Image: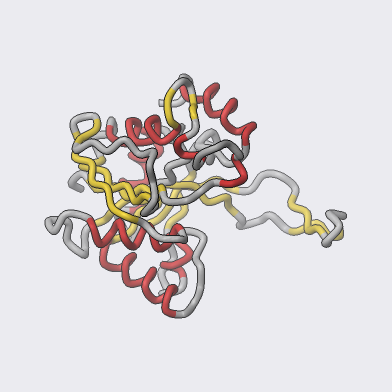
Length: 229
């Protein structure tokens, strides 16, 4: 399979992370978080170029035409992740055909491992696409409105979803448009594809592929950065 383009939605505010700017621009190991993510993606031989979808009023992104020797394109995203991904798919170079696979990766996942990306492309590329994830290993509780545990839920067959996620450009754009037209906010690309009858392949990845969400996550991500390649 040829190298793939990767769409990185980065228009969110990340309010749970606190701070005076969106979390993707907060400092991690002396640099904006998103810089680490983009450089790690660009360093992978499976990735041909990067498309970053930012907010219309973004004043933080340091635009550049290339990163790590790979082309980098910037477009305006939307109010929801799904809208940003769709905008990114539309803004990809015309040479990326509808039946070609594309990757989608969270801007706030700077610790993704190269081996996991390789495995995802190899395995999910044999079908209609898939996503990195990990089987749920903790005991799962259901809580009431007061945060009291009221039941223990089965964890068999349940996975945590990571990124990258990989689907064909045209099929994913169609799935995202259908969800938007139905008024459904999908939490990830796999959810949009599931609504069209596709069963994405779950490819087990490293659990240190964390999504930076809270202030405490920055310290953990900094610890992991030098240990995940």
